[in-house]
Length: 319
Image 1: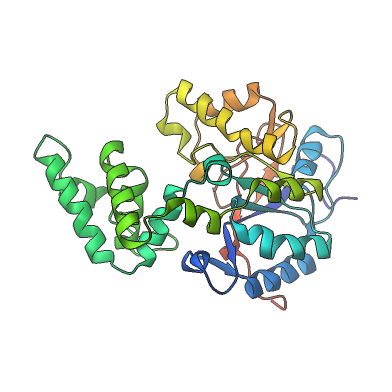
Image 2 (image 1 turned 60 degrees about the vertical axis):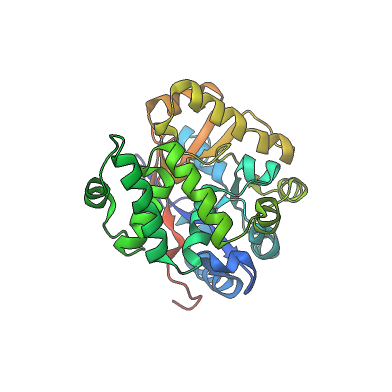
């Protein structure tokens, strides 16, 4: 049964989670939900929505099945250890379907994602010193014909939905705003000085293991691909995008999941026409962005579906 009238487009709420963690450890320094907050929000979701699987949306778009009233899909990005330690037990206990999107380099190769390096650098609490290091690097580049400090300030010093302007400035420049050789050196140096010189040790604490994603897949949870290195696809050439997607599919192999069909989650929600063509050619049936909207489920939208952030939903089961 469905609450969608005949001829109307089905809609679904897709919720995006990242870090869900116990009360202590490195993951607790990252923005996210603790175990109690996730349990409470899951209670709210189950009280007000009907959880469905990610591929149920594909069947609805193709007309081979209908969605129940108020369908919701839970999705978990980046492959954090808390997805195994905190999330999975609650999902299995409540028979709640969900989809997980680990990154290949972190889960399989022991690398810390740049996005997490930057979060941990900021969590060290030295924002002014971090900005000073960025400005010094920018000034050196400007002396060789690079963009000026004023250029970067005008473009990136602005607030976001979740962060003040100085934090957005640090995140954007260290994520993608600076030239790659400058950005790479800065991130690695700041991480080593402010967080840890043992990257593989940090990765082992933060992320899922291949054995864990294999068990999650075996328990009926969906494992999808989320990039090889977690980089924005639109910043890459078509050939580089193909390599990034192919590398991402290593996660499916490790989980014992089929490569055809599969689900993809765009790193930072970023994609372009080349990315969609490359995914479609590899039999990707559904792909997720970070655009904060309720999803309209049609065959034409399946590779660019929006998601709400966990912060867009009430945190309490009684809300």
